[in-house]
Image (cartoon, rainbow, N blue to C red; front, side, top):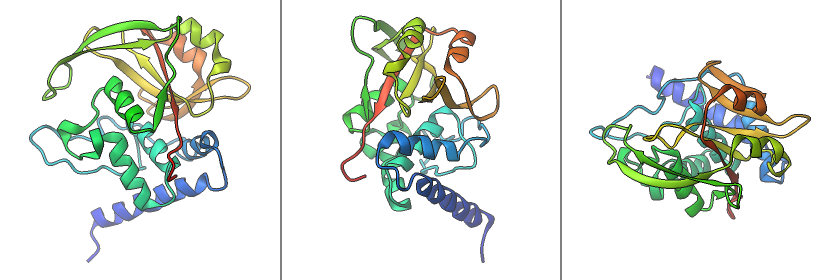
Length: 237
């Protein structure tokens, strides 16, 4: 007997495979990221789609029906690095969890940790370097069940992002640093370059995946700065 859960799982599988196919024929990763992320434009924004907790068994969430800002980035990055659903599941685990070990405690709950883990795994390269990058220190303690820790990281000021937008490429991951002392980042999205530089992201405000002008987003939000991560093509992709 086919259950509703089985039906949803098949629908998600077909949706992910269609997203992978949407980038078929694009040789460079930047074009793949644009194609896959564009496939998901208009999908709903979901609050806390992964759920779970330190006392619960972790299950891999594979859904294309809706996203928060992080699961949108993870899904797009994994699909852009994959040839089929089997590849996608394997890559998503490595992106979402430390060393690909699927448990709630190994999930990359904070974006600085996410960035460093995925740079070590070879999925991204941190471009937030040089004299323009400012150093920040945060004591991360807002996720219940995750041991508090202090981290340092760098971000570019808003004005650098606007003035140096030619350095940013389509598909670059933009991480927006929080002004709060106990949080590293409050949002993340993809850069889409064209006539104007756009931010493609799962927007809590719009409740959907949208494109909006990056400069307008920067003006509307208080932040400590922007981290720039460049996706890197995996040898097996």
